[in-house]
Image (tube, rainbow, N blue to C red; front, side, top):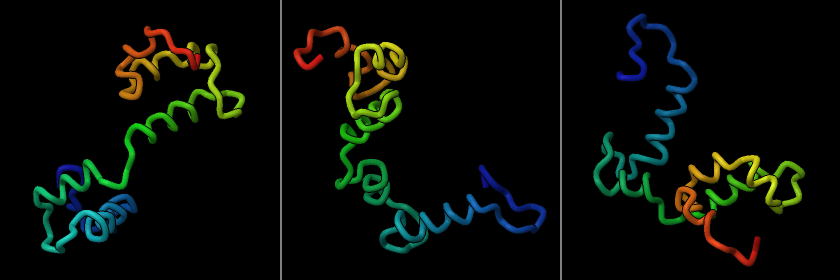
Length: 102
């Protein structure tokens, strides 16, 4: 109700329907209509999801202008704000260290 209150009695927007389906199909694992501590933990920290790999893929996808799956120094510098704000670079700290791979 904080995000959508159907006060007019009209149809629900598609995003509300999608969120309800996500909740019932994937979040409410024990089907009790609410999320308990274990369900919240599974949602926030899923065991089958590699956060570091996902963040690295995101950085490459967004910064690799020529789409060669390799980042040049220029591509990194052109998108420095994304790298500095990324958990994958320890919020920019790792960019100041010497790296043989660069």
